[in-house]
Length: 380
Image (cartoon, rainbow, N blue to C red):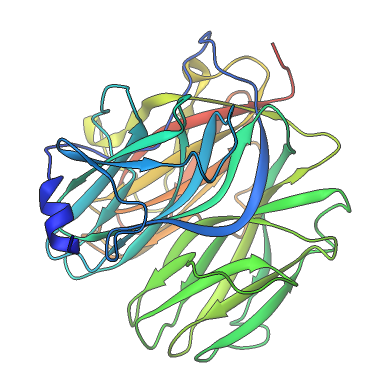
């Protein structure tokens, strides 16, 4: 089946923008994380992983993750959108949420990391509004055993604009995180931003010492500045490889946390839930800071949240930064967008008194925050 035939078969009316959440007091599984070398599990362009059920796709992950998996982390890419499009992913057998995980403008290719709860069948439903190819790369999964999360305020660990210079075509570089991560680290979470792009390209992040996977972490057009959250396994050397496909590009990496084998927080995934939408009140102005209270969606002991942050209706090129809010804004960014654009990006944000802050650099912009779950050291 062709890309267009598959996606026209699953066109459906969905609204808004999101990931996956856990309301306070809800019974959700306590899980820990296992990172994998990125694995392509869905590609509608060639039929990989494609199943169709009624008006949506069905992605069967039973051959990719073990029984008992409660949630998965996917890098979701929308390829060559013929019209403005968005994609929603949710657990099979549950009601489709009025949210989306990925927004792609016409004639663009874009990616967004997605954390989504997984039912016992280990199947996900995927609905598309628009016309584009859909690609999903498995980054890891949450189950009863694995590594716990340790979060902190974002820390810049690489900026090629002030360091080694841009990556050229088919060029790789090694990001050494041995001074940032403990020896027990099994995976790292960082926001990867690309800028000064000179050609249509993609960037791939993967563990140093293994073959480069057939997967992508970030997709770009000439002149773009774009970010995507990356969760990647780390070997004992605690090094990550980064590859640029075409043209030249500068890369920036801001670490917000890591997973360790000997400690760390449990993750509690849940069902999609919107936390805040400034379109219902007023946008965030230049230099403004939005306080995001997640106490209704978390427990008292929550240390961090997995959220999808979407910026829309921007009046100027700008970037947003999410951080705990109990200190000075860090020299880091969470997502970048131009005037008039709608851009989502997932973030794992550490909390301060069950809240975090989101700042806007320039112009005014509306901000939508949807929660995918929370991290806590306390296991019920």
